[in-house]
Image 1: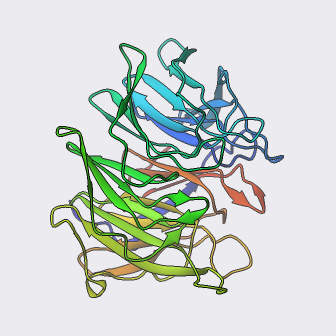
Image 2 (image 1 turned 90 degrees about the vertical axis):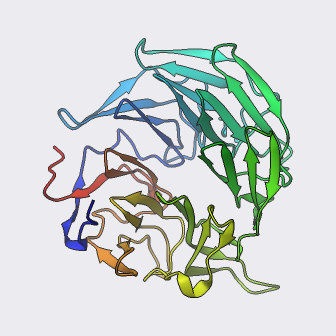
Image 3 (image 1 turned 60 degrees about the vertical axis):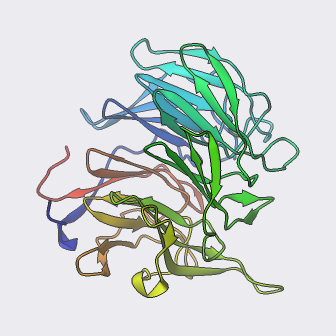
Length: 354
């Protein structure tokens, strides 16, 4: 498939959220987008569950979660959405686990975590959820790996990962679960580790070349992990700085590409939406050296080996939630001084969405 030209990408504003939302979680079931939880304008975690309907361009309110929460980990198991951990109404981690059946339209409480956790990273293998790391109520990171069995409704403890962390990026490629970065007590980590689901063992891989927080992570179709932008930690009394730096790890070679083999983004930014869309890495919005949130968007053309500017978002914002469904990038909510109710979609002009 040919990589689309920059001018072919087009933004369209869709129905705004019922209210401004940030730290919500998006999930796709059967090509439909669900939005779960998040914080409202007052910073309170909410129990909301909303479905976006392209027919009529509207949000449909569904039965709310039994436990209000923000920053929850979500796994889709068949037609069901498993919601794990997050931050509750008392601003503490949550141990409750709940599952929404999209066909029945109702919630069920499931077996809780052994302890309350936020910042859990979750993936799905063979209809089982793999939950890694997290931060406990004592604000300390965890090194746990646990597996949820839907049929038995039980959590099984698997071999712990070498490095305790929360808010890590977890990606499953075949039988390998890659866990990259994350944080310990607000400090970003350079750790990269992989768990083999067949041998049930962890391997430590070459560390991330630079410490960064609030960067973007994109996995391309060649099994490469691309770390983009973010805030680089200053040494000593130096302040953190926005970066446009790009690091790429090739899982086939088990090594990081040399710096001369990567191309830096055009704009220094952090806390942005990032996705692999139609053969391109795309980054949108975020924070940079401007006094307010960014609306700029850029995409990497692998043949030309360069970043190209796309049309800007209509609503500048950072801390958005985003998801790719049917080759379209949906960017939902976020912050522009206050929680945003903006909802936009990036797609190819010729392929009308609505």
